[in-house]
Amino acid sequence: QGKLVESGGGSVHSGGSLRLSCAAAGYTSRRYCMGWFRQSPGKAREAVATIDRDGTTGYADSVKGRFTISQDNAEDTLYLEMNTLKPEDTDMYYCAAYSQFMTAVEALTASPIDWGRGTQVTVSS
Image 1 (cartoon, rainbow, N blue to C red):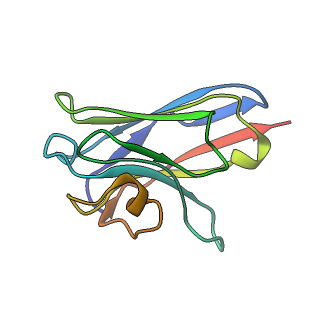
Image 2 (cartoon, helix red, strand yellow):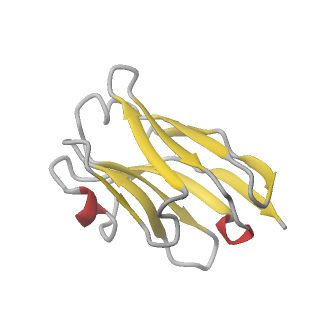
């Protein structure tokens, strides 16, 4: 794990919204492919959203239409806007950097090269 730092997690009721932020340690300003994944102990990592150097985005089917990934290259910050949250979205969310020239679609199934310590999202019914 490198110097990526996530923030913005918390507890909300079903149907609520959260916005995660990530101080991207230079990755977005250098136009790396970036993304968010979620993972709980004992469970496989699931990439939920990615964005490549051209600004093309990719989403897991489970979050399409509800989550939006964006980035501010000047501020070197990655965001994940999460709407209409469901209890099954409860997880630890990690900001991740992927290979610089990887596409958003490729990154959905690729291993990240760097990630943060995570921020917890809890959605109650």
